[in-house]
Length: 290
Image 1 (cartoon, helix red, strand yellow):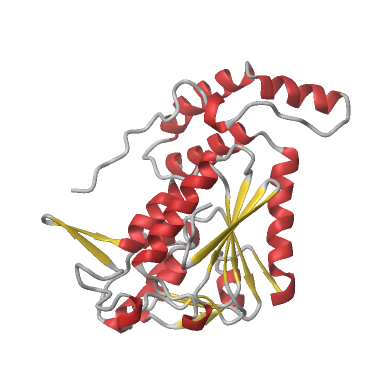
Image 2 (image 1 turned 90 degrees about the vertical axis):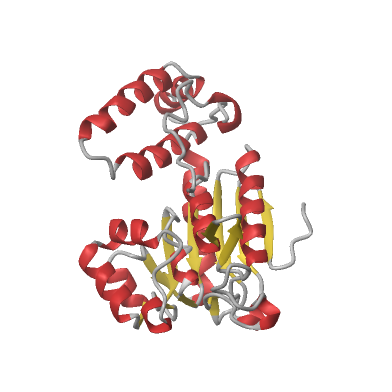
């Protein structure tokens, strides 16, 4: 396991937990944290035994209090050399966006356990998670307009899909901080939990996935829902649905799914994401940054 400095990665059975680990800085985001999270996701994707990934923050104050604006955090976070942007020749890339794009491409389901304050990139990095839970004391804020900048981390793509355009516009244009109950009521968060129960609730969902589903089916489902729902016509989904159900129906996992159902026993799916995805996966062309 790599010697991470700003996150921790723990793999316990079929569930991995990535923890943002700068509690003295309220887990503020830096370029190092971005790089370490991407490396951790590379590890969890490569490990077939990992069936779900939980992402949380260290301590009980904050999930992530946004980008670290201090010199010790990297400094000048909005410059080309800070943790918020990177310059390569004439290309400037947002570090939060690099992270959310990697989260988007995860082959494992991502479950967020937001344990406290989540503002700026602390809020936007959660948008590609598949399921988001929060402590009842958590607070959120898309505060960019109050800092004289604009939404980052591809949040202009993710946020309206999760909460609708009206809510996304309100939250981003006012930049106000809102509580966990509002986040739940408007669809950003699945459920609220006492701080002490949050990780247990997230792990329960992770184990529901791990114990009962095919890893290949979940990886395909994740890719299909995220990638096909924004397309311009349901025919786009129908083309992939048809190929996916045909290929997967002939798989060892499908045979095991039917047999375990008929025999009234827990399934033991043999197929792996690393070796048994359908032959047409991935079906999309990954766009370049230009």
